[in-house]
Length: 230
Image 1 (tube, rainbow, N blue to C red):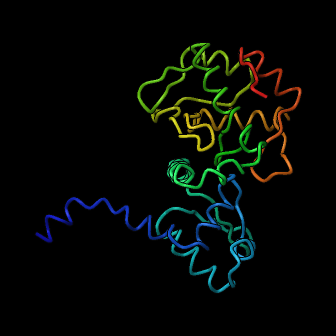
Image 2: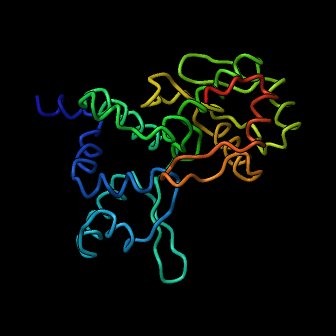
């Protein structure tokens, strides 16, 4: 019986255990906007001592939720990859559904309108981007994944978006916790957000993780045939 039980275990309890502590949740939340931060700054954000932060970060890296890279004498932590970011976004989505309605109404409007979700675009603008790409047949949707079309590759060249399709899925659907419908995640969506930020079509907002749409950004979405919802 024990052997049979082990054979069907997927190991997700290790992930849920790693995310179950409020300090570790705060650390992961601080990194969710695509940032890479040192342990000392994460300790301050989580309200724990440097020694406690070290233990928390070790648990998160051992669970492969965070990755770490060395620069000089500093170690920087970040969300491990886009798949982990999708998992966390889904957990946020579930938490938002079960939270009190007053808390849901308390989400700042800039976050609802446009924000980063790891390395891709989320919020109303992220959903509008998905709709625009589908409407122009620049992407083809199949289940929870999507691929770029030949028209999409031509559009990338016209917009100077640096994306080269590989063997893995070009993008996937990621549940949007404020809009309750999916936006796009994955390499192609990441490349679009990188270009929008580089060209100042989107600019940082004073609200953490929120992005401000500039006139260049409005022109980009107009070329895509998207009506901006704000």
